[in-house]
Image (cartoon, rainbow, N blue to C red; front, side, top):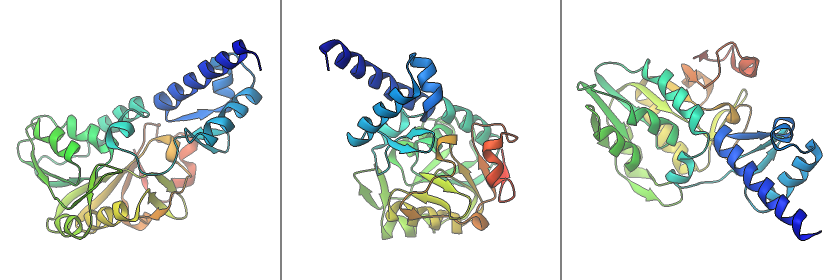
Length: 252
């Protein structure tokens, strides 16, 4: 391999990382068109990136690598989609009472845009989401617990008890993956346990996920579809990518 081709490959893979952060996933054909190379070249690049731990290959392309990641790192991935999801989810917020937000960066967008909801209590197991909500007119509650360093969220028995100590109008949760058969799943058992406590204390659960997480699975089983009322994505509810979920949950 010549020095020029090596540099070209490094530049191309850097652009693929930027596409992943922008779109939440990489599609072979779309990336090939954008970068002006063949789909086979993209496949080879993704194989090298997977070996380096930068992506996880799936059918048709690649997504972000599985496993726990800090909040700041997660917040930069698929930012455009998260903004659309937050805009939709804000319409589902009650004017008063209590709601819960998990420790995801997706629901963090909701926390940051609550506005002057002065009668709304917002419970969360994320310091970042607590801080974002505190900068609005809402009343944030940090449920506490043990800090999980890998994800920057509070988990464990104390967090579970804190999550279950209030009654919520709605619980807004993201997920590492959503599957038509197994429901939502997450990166760690500890994260999933806290989410189940929030869901058990809520009148309704709203799952907020971007399209890159559809028809995927992670290690920790979390919520069954019978526990979920609404799923919010950046897609139009009529998008065919949502067809596997159409009879399972209301789509927004």
